[in-house]
Length: 138
Image (tube, rainbow, N blue to C red; front, side, top):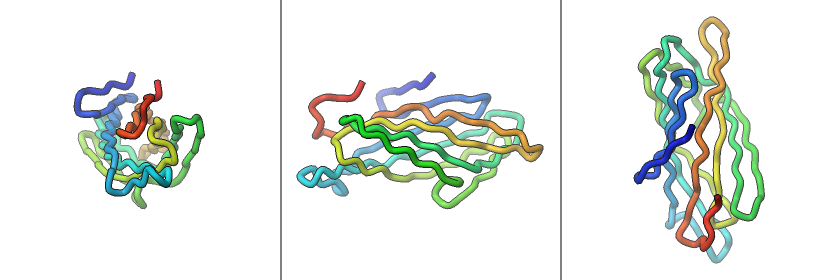
């Protein structure tokens, strides 16, 4: 189950792979008068399992406050396929532009073990909220 605290950090645990996301609205990159709203998000993944995993694929579902959906699939994250041994942590930052003042993101990462096992680690749903939206998505 995803949890959020006062700092805006969202976290999910899938079989020991802990995925935490912290989004931040980027006022300087956004242009509300042109329907451009931009967020940065930092993802931290921690391997709390006894298995070494390599991240191979990412999947994102992005829904804006007007109900428009985007799906993003690709290899690795930010051009990398990090290998996480037990206890290792990997962190990266990326961004998401929307044409609406708020939205939600969720997704998953596919990891593969040295033995060829697959793990689909859930990325918790997280809010993309800006000060320009009068109604927040539920």
